[in-house]
Image (cartoon, rainbow, N blue to C red; front, side, top):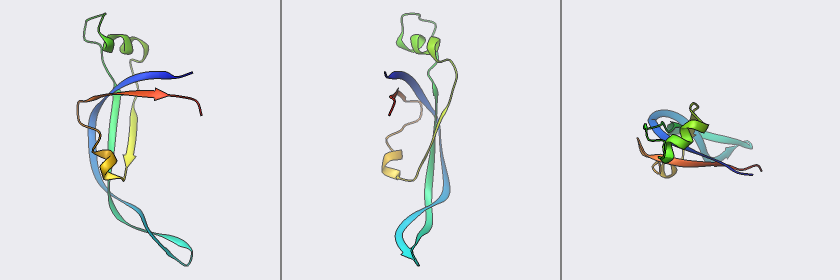
Length: 92
């Protein structure tokens, strides 16, 4: 079973965090400063057209939030403000 939702990016935040450098010291991972981007998505909202796809998604999922902390900047650049994305939930 898969559940499909439709979300819109409402915020992209840039913060300073850390990530593994790939080095180890005495068997421990070494971390260095890295930019982290947090992408916040919320369900799409209805547009007063019952036949519109967004209205159908809104009826099923009117509230919620997905918050992704991304240190791979190339991956984070796949998300754009105000763009909509399908999100599929599939059991593992």
